[in-house]
Image (cartoon, rainbow, N blue to C red; front, side, top):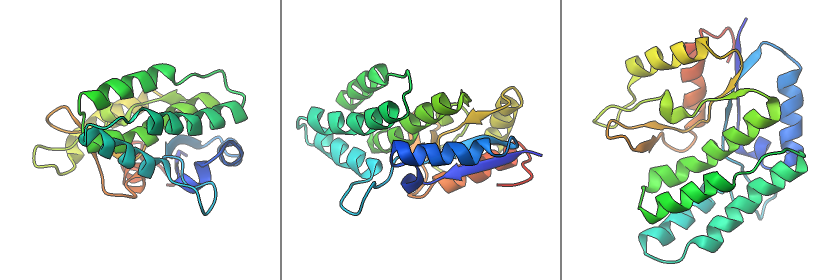
Length: 202
């Protein structure tokens, strides 16, 4: 049996939450494919990472300095990484994000980075493979989900990977740019992954 599990933002908001999720996954060796959302709120007054990314990119669109808000996002991930005692650095990833923001990569790209980065952290924590959703989930020219191409590429890729983390919420557009599903789209990604591996349980 193969199981696909998806975890929402509140369950991945901190190192403590990550540890709980890790126990859930490791409790059943059939839970082989994991779809994470971006970190959510740690408390009632907190801000979701996706909302922080949207706000950060609005500064980019207004040609304002976005470095401090982006640094605050990095601090969220560093707190999780340090809390889990991982030997992982997201320095290069954030350097690339800064460059892409400067080059006006788009609001969908900005929003997707929360899941992308959390996927890297989750894969490192679990010792699973990391598969960037942009390499395996596709959108057609009209912006609709390209189910046939996705099924072909994703199923082949997952056949080669016994255990993997695939970030939710986004994929690659026909124009080569990142595209996102609507908010809550990580649930959609989970179902796409479950279909690709013929999961017995999602």
